[in-house]
Image 1 (cartoon, rainbow, N blue to C red):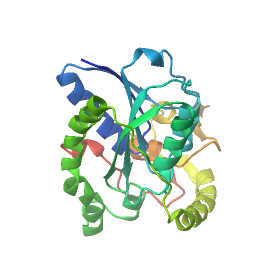
Image 2: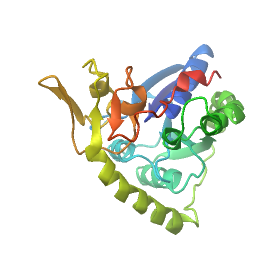
Image 3: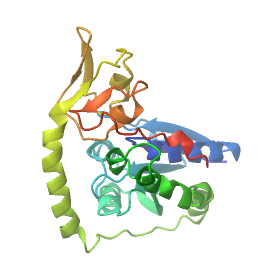
Length: 262
């Protein structure tokens, strides 16, 4: 039986859901899985003790999240096999390649890769709950859930074969980079408009959830800083649905990955 490190980052919850499914399934098969959620300044210790590493990431505007890239850049140089998996709305972009390139330079051996189309949790905010558009945005979770169920076995097979794979830069990257720049210019206008509305109970969930430690509670007020990568983790996972972006999200549905039911 193998001892795995499962390092992942997740915003609204897609990647966390898949990571949890991988962990449960591998442990049921007798393996040991240490699961670590990547946050700012996360430091991975004793990585040489693991037989293999599994890294999971969402795709944010065709790239891997900056926080996960920072953590990966902080990994020690060592030769270890790694399996990569990505959750995406539709297009992978350059996300897998940029993670692959960093790990390759550090001496890691990429022995497998998967990408899974799941609900786009940003577009979901443009719908209303239980409408046709809402159901359309959630449809990938039904169509592609079989790919999730097969992933643990695919991971184990890849580690058994231990054959290195190569990931390459996508030819459409100039186009996706152009779209991403337009989007991030818009998010700079949205980020200062995050706030907690009157439903907030000051429970502190958002403070604990933020991977950038960008949220704090002071004088009975929730304060949002500027170190935000727009993962929407606080917005989607607030138990009171009290986190808002200006008045744009007041009636928007929140994502519930636990309803995927794999």
